[in-house]
Length: 93
Image 1: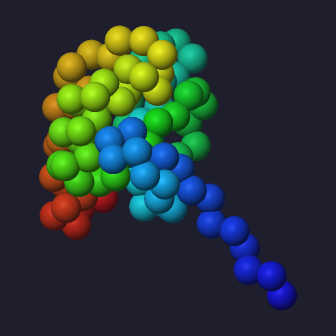
Image 2: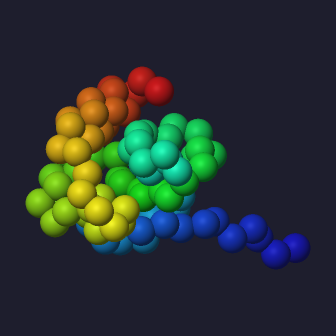
């Protein structure tokens, strides 16, 4: 039997392809609100980020989320993502 293909997504920080289930999904909902999507099922445009601080720094410096969402993003988004990455690194959900 053929093995199932693992979907890959591009990290907006390091610009590398990684398996989708290892990345954090950030979604811009149809109403325009940008939030973290832990389930990966919220409607809207998604952008993916490796769960580490180096990729977050690169995404912030390069404007990765602004590029992905085709518009400006609130700088507070990066602070919320830093908290989520810190929790992820500690092993919390």
